[in-house]
Image (cartoon, rainbow, N blue to C red):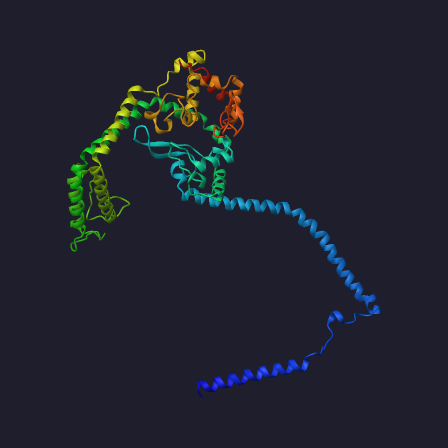
Length: 474
């Protein structure tokens, strides 16, 4: 049998089926074999009024009773279900916020747990690369409300490493993502009791910074001198680094030899690279490798092969960096010398110094401890905004209260803004409210945080007395 036979058989079957259904249709046209149910006569009254109706009504009563019970029960459980949905939505939002916190590297500056950290930043006045103090944000809602935090996230903080994150500020996050991030910030806020326990530590840290400022600035001057030296040596080091990359690459490319420790490096490779690394270490300032051909890990925890690959990568990076310094030698040297001059001038002026005894005598009736604590609180909680350059380090710090992100407070300025001490106390406790007036002709923008939840009123009043007691400017 071939395929044509099957095709013919199928065709005949189809034609037969069409003919049959057509004939059935014509025979039944115009006739109704069975009366539709909606046109049929229903049961007679004698039958309806017996057990059939009773059963139907009984079922209806049972169903109605069940609905009567179930609807209130469902209603009573609705608030709990709604709360469950709210918790579920919040949990999902927190999880998304956590991913955003990690994806955009918030923890790189503010700490994985939001406890604070540091960020690299080029200080604008000096051109020096500094370690900028990034504040803790695991306590931010004790000072700001959600909308104020949203503002800082959207627009960032100009003249600091904090970039804009919201679309309106030119950042990458939409409103929904900002909502999720704020939910996550709420999630890892520390208890208020823990925040209050840190007051003494914060005060002591700020006072210790004043005490060690000379050493900090000396260290920065030494680093700047080292940078100038590296720039000066770059043209001399560049050809050595280029040759080093070629030599180390050639040594690694050897195809035969003995590999005693079976680490993928021939014994002669390990020996020759170790000797060569020592010969160029002084010139390039690179590491000296001491590889042992009998040990797979000459440095505990690192395979020798990995160490050598890393060493070659460092040499290649040196070639790039030295090339950049050599090509832009004049520009980099000018900037480095400008930075050094700035640091040396800062060290000479020592604007970070504070005469505690003078403050004690002029404001606190000679009470040295009160004066010290007042300055410690101000530097720990206020200076980041109200003392220029404070977050960049001691060398960049101007006179206390000189103003930065917030207005200058020195020289009796607060006495002009707040005629009454009580008004000033209330303002520091509650912070500014967007569009709400304060003091003399002040209009809040929501940027000034309230400190009533993080400092006792006694400490707030101590700082206020310190500011109000400052000698007016000439």
